[in-house]
Length: 208
Ligand SMILES: [Fe+2]
Image 1 (tube, rainbow, N blue to C red):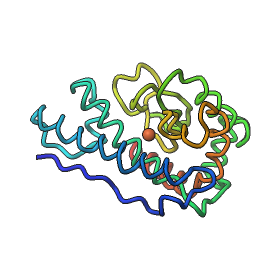
Image 2 (image 1 turned 90 degrees about the horizontal axis):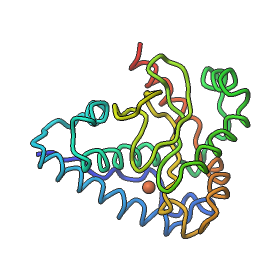
Image 3 (image 1 turned 180 degrees about the vertical axis):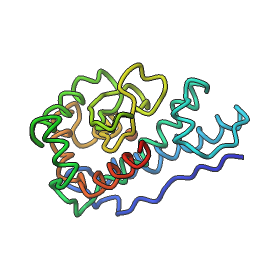
């Protein structure tokens, strides 16, 4: 029996205001994320899959049903998203990640502009990612629905996500309505670069 559970938020529902409002955070975590967890457990039970290694399942997602893909991605992606947000974020990156971002994208501002372009360019629901490719380099990609760059259904550029922005309307519509660009700009005010730096190191250690 699989027993994925909803992770606790490491801050209060209103902690990210005014950038992400309390009602959005509450519904997003308690209803949307909880539904991904419940539906993932049901889909894995249906598939008679007892593994709880979600990383490994996502990397072989082509072997599973659409329900595992959608809800496994949903659980993984949202867990990462809560983790990289903070009411007391480190607003700039430094060290190896900063250096690699500069070398790959030109500058932090160029990187943010590329992420915004990816987020705006994702038609309908999805995510835009910064991820560590399996060869160790950094890349940006957007994915539809609850897909992410780890999944073996991605045709190119697979790797480990270290920063993801949820561009489903459920992530921003109550406060920003149709203004996805404004939400994408606000995101950087609550992004904690120390969490992304930690995920960068973890990703590099997985491919060494
Ligand atoms: Fe979401």
